[in-house]
Length: 212
Image (cartoon, rainbow, N blue to C red; front, side, top):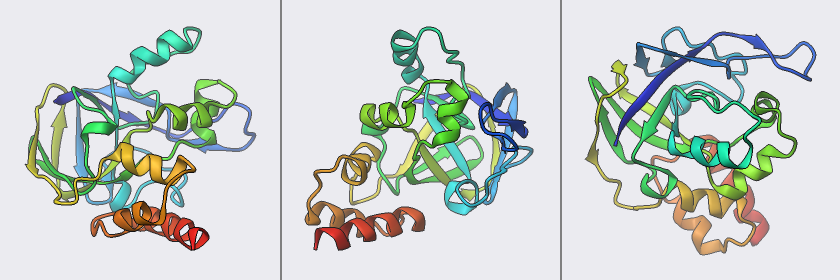
């Protein structure tokens, strides 16, 4: 697995959302510097839902763009369309475990949580109902927390430095929270992942309370 593209964004108006700006509109660049609080020079407008230590870097599998092109050929599907900082090759949600630690060039990173698609992404791609479509496909991407800052360029290999012992994948986490059929034991297993981001822990705790 390797980095296929690195992307940065600046605030832009969101179509259909008067007065709203977002940094989801990314452009591919030569190099980025990743740090504990995010990517240097990358705009984070909605700090309630984006950015911070547990969402420092957004990743998205580049191969998903091929399937989106087939399903929705009228839309534009370039690296960065999902607002990701790192477009990756050779890995997807089924092959990434929460808490895994990666080395990417100089940087050391840990998988912190799945990405939850939002209305801004739907407005970005211009497809009605895309949030639900994305969740149903499981093509969400995920976030990294940065344990050691550093530079990242396209083409760098991603090396697994430590696999988390729980072995719970991003795909499994998505299914538990969004699939509508998870049992209490599955929720408890996710809550037991010590590295899981607080925002996901809160959502899972609410789901667990509903399950009794």
